Image (cartoon, rainbow, N blue to C red):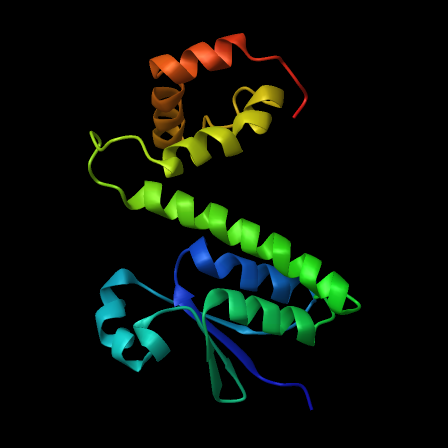
Amino acid sequence: MMPSYKFVYFDLRARGELTRYVFHAASKEFEDSRFSFEEWNSLKPTMPFGQAPVLLVDGKTLAQSGAIARFLAREFGLAGKNSWEQGMVDQYMELATEMMDEIVKWYFEKDEEKKLTAADLAVLDIFDTPMYYTPNFMDSFPKLKAHRERIASLENLANYIKKRNVTDL
């Protein structure tokens, strides 16, 4: 008998979309239970660690987005064929998590005048190649695009970018 899966998260992509991708890529049925920010305060005390997302598998609860995605990847044959491949999969999942962490820091930062951080440089860097090949890549994200342009225009960075060798990557 197939397990029953219920995935519980905000009505956002954020830290929940990878799990949804895993379900859909594996053609596995699941209940995609989404809630609003208004509902969060009443749900939070019922969540392990007071955090979301959570996955319910036949009534058992698993928390933490990375643990959930890795569990499902193993269940559905998407985690690698052996320990080495699993380690490589984990390596890239951790890299993606670190990038997401930096984007989240940027997204929730309210102080527009706050000093430059590595998170700002990560946003500048991660979009270099897509912007090189598709200059309008960020047009649908005007705030992120403006932020990136502001960082790129800082004198020391602008001078470096202007003088650096042009490469494909």
